[in-house]
Amino acid sequence: PSVSRMDTSRPTGTDLARQIVVISAVAFMIVAAMVGTGLFGGTNVRDLQGGALDADATVLAPATPAFSIWSLVYALMVAYAIWQALPGQRGRERQRRAGWWIAGTAVLNGGWLLAAQFLTLPVTVVAIVVLLIALGATLRALVRTPAETWADRVFMDATVGIHLGWVSLATVANVTAWLAAEVVPAMDSDGQQVWGVIVLVVVALVGLALAFGTGGRIAPALAMAWGLVWIGAARTSSEPQAAAVATAAFIVAAVVLLAAVAAAVRRRAVAAAIGD
Image 1 (cartoon, rainbow, N blue to C red):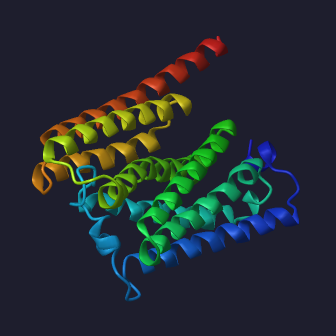
Image 2 (cartoon, helix red, strand yellow; image 1 turned 180 degrees about the vertical axis):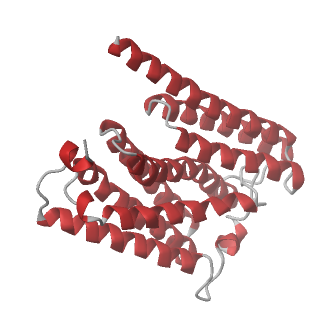
C-alpha cells in the first residue's frame, strides 16, 4: 500500500505551518553555517574563541577533515526540507511526530554556530548540549514511529541519526575545549591522556546505549565512529600527540560499530521469533 493509505490523514493548517517552519529553520541553519565558516566575512569556527575549537586545542579534538561531515548533515537536512514539503507528506503521522523536532534541531544547530561566532565558549557548551538533547528526542520519536519507505529511512532516520551521532562526539569535544580553556588548570601530557581515555570510555557507553536503545540504527554509529577515527588520527599525526588517547579512540570506534551491528541482529532475531 502507498504511504497515503498507511498513515496519512486529512492535512490541516497546522501541517502546512509545520512544513513552512521546517523550510525556514533549515534555511536559517544554512545561513548560520555560512556565517560560521566565515563566508560572509566572519571568522572561521576553527579560529574562534581563541582557537579553543580547533583541531589541536585538546586531546579529544578531531582532525580537521572530520568536520567535513557537516556538509553531509546540511545536504541531508536540505533534502529533508524539500521532501517533507511535498503534498503527500503533509498529513503523515510520522511527519507530525518528528517534523517539529527536526525543525528545532536545525534552529539549534544554527544557534550553536552563531554562539561560537558572537558569544562565549560556555554559551556554545549550553547550545550544543541542548542540541544533543533535541536530537535524542527526535530520534526517539522516529524509533517509536517506524519507517515505512526508503525515503523515510534516508531523509528522516539517516539525517537525524548522522546528526545525532556526530553531535554526540562534538559535544564531548566542545565541553573538553571549554574545560581546558577556562576551567581546569593546565595539565601535563600524562594527565591529559588519562582524562582523555576516561572520557572516551564514557563515549563508548553512550554509543552502546544509542545502539541498543534504537534497535541497531547504523547512522549514529557511523557518525560517531567517523569522529573517533579522526580523533585517533589527530593524536598520532599532530599536536598534542597522545598515543593512549589515539588507541582508545580507534577501539571505541570499533566498539560503537560492532554494538550497532549486534543490536540490529538482535532486533531482527526478536522480530523473527515473534513472527514465528
